[in-house]
Image (tube, rainbow, N blue to C red; front, side):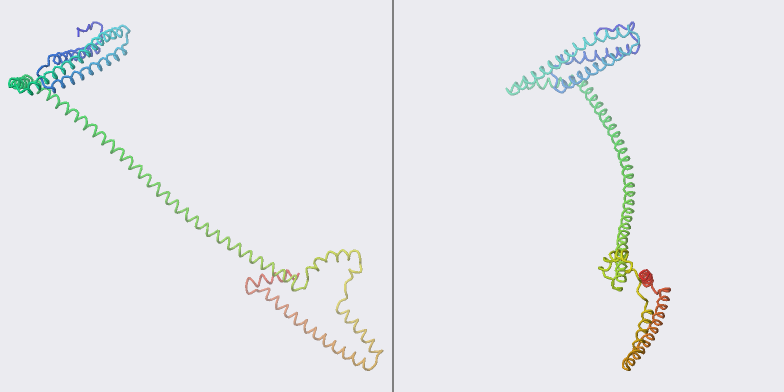
Length: 353
């Protein structure tokens, strides 16, 4: 790579350019070693090819960084200068990439040809070929001893770097896993607490439902008992109103007709004579019959009057007994022995009225 003009280039861009130039020279050295690689084992060629590819990737990444730096320049002149330099560098880098591929291919072909020729000579059994192969192997080992040691140390360093990187990643992954486990534990604790709260709510709800069911059954029993008491009361009232008084349903049906005819015929509204008036009238009739009749009729009339007096005495005794029983019933109604008797007494009064 030709030297980069740095007259008007900023300092930090110049530093990036110098680093890119060093990498470019290193890649050129790898290309020359690949082109001059003869009599070396395949592992050396593979190591050089891998180093050349890595160096190419590093140069490409550095070019991208310089492109970003060019876009970040404040002055348009600086940006144009950096972009022009990058275009030249990219053109040279593309040529260098082609050279790297050709060097890797040619070194691989050279090693393959040497290996094939040695294999043919060994198969033929030529002693000179065996000695030549051994001399080449020894010479390659002696000539590339320092290179082999450098490559080995480089591989070890890279291996240690990769191991350290893996360990760091593993530590970070373990820390992240521990954090996730901690958060999961907290979430589980919160979930367990919510489950306990739901369990308490379910238990309370179950108790309330049980109490509501009991209250429902109690209401049903009370309603049934009320219906039974109501039915008994209705039956008792019907018994008092219909069966005990001898009032038939037909009489109730004809009562409107009787009331209507009583309005049309006033004589039907006359009240019947009282029992005292009827008895007095019967006494007068009997006395008249005794005064005008025979002795046999007089004896019969006397016997009738006697039986009438006895009947009046019996009626008076019955009236006294009825009054006594009524007073007793009133006292019993005034002080009932039980709630049922009290209810029946009230119903008797209502029915009597």
